[in-house]
Image (cartoon, rainbow, N blue to C red; front, side):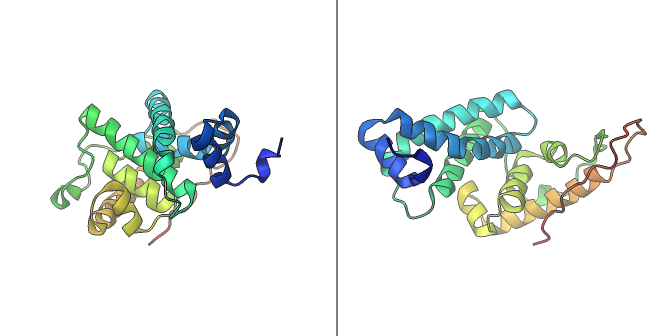
Length: 196
């Protein structure tokens, strides 16, 4: 048998679609599942259980949709789209109002939660779903506003305004006073978010 690491995503996908090759699916899953789960977990916030459910639904949708994938982009790019669509379906089922109108972008008047330490993922989890989706896709995954807009089915302007509001909220959350602790591990480093 061929070393699986030498096979391309396309070769593995072809084996899955042609004959349902479980070994090929397992390799695709091994390559892409960790990043997809992290993306989904960041999109839904702090609920690991919800993220696991969406992750499973995402892979079921991948298997179903793989034969129609045209390879116009990298498989990983398509997988992000499937994960985002599954997360949007989750939000719809739960009744979340994912995207705010432009008038609703003012910062919340509710007090910021106090975080035990500077925790970017924790701060992102406190964002409203629409803001969280844009900051994850743009700042963490590296998609342009046009690409974010396409995946979330909004305008690029909405993506930009959601990102602006998200960054303001994150600054407020990450700079909130923290209680004094006896933690001797030293300061926690928070990665800088891109400014564009």
